[in-house]
Length: 460
Image (spheres, rainbow, N blue to C red):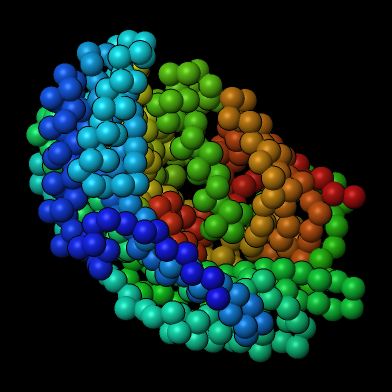
């Protein structure tokens, strides 16, 4: 058994990581801001956090690791006019806070001026902090976590005699609390939790060996899929991939499973982030107002969903998060901006410092069940796994290794592997035909299966 633990000096903070720690972290942030002002900074900000977690991993019924994490940190940024300096520490004692601020101030005096640097504008900061129901601790002891992981793995191994090996089942429970403050008078914090169960299994038939997995994640442990169901799903997926074949090179429709479709949206987000836009390093430069998707597609951001995995009352700069339409009727409505990138572009922050918050992709009138989506595809490739990093963010060229299933006559015919799929993301987005109603909510991007009209499929 391996146990990892981060030592610390603030004993009162070591016991629990919840909303009760917010006043103590607020004092740490307040001290940092006070020290920065005393050091002559014209603006300053500080972000303090505590995290605590337990992860137990079992392989073939035996305990592999039990890890106990207890981390904390403070990040400080100071501004002397338009000169910025940043420093961080894992020590939250008053002495360490003062030393960290002094280092940030020293750095700022030697950096070049940047007219876009500085805090978020005061009028953009969050004033009302909603309770988003993000904190649901799981009173999980190591032996309980191990027992759950064993039950998950055993359920998967029992699916079929051909499930012969395992890369492990893990049960993880994480909780954290964060406080952010700046010299505009903003100071707020909140607690959150995240719990995950994962199982990775291998199936074998003669010389053929295939691997697959399943997982469930949620803010509230009560919202996780049943432990045994996660293991069984992993086992069933591994068995279903046995007998995988190569495909001849061709052009054909491609269906991306929900978790793979999420990756296409991530590439879209990367292209419309402020940093990519002002650096002129995006295949979607100056694309606001352009029809990037078919008219049926809508993408909205919903930061305040209760228990949402991407929910947050404010972004990493204290800017208020709000519901937002990012794509309406296929047309891009705006970029994803923090304060710095917004200034570089002559725009206003969208509250996305640190990323997006619960992006929901819908297609009213063009949504089908997964089975109907395959029938509509006809002869197609159904992609359930992607490999490699073959996405060029400047040109949009896309080429990745893939595996999944060949669909013939609208029904799955056999598993397929050792394939490369290729295209250009601009074309791929326009070739979207329909979405499935099998929406995957296990992340900050929620989307169902995605059917594209056609792509190049390279095989034999």
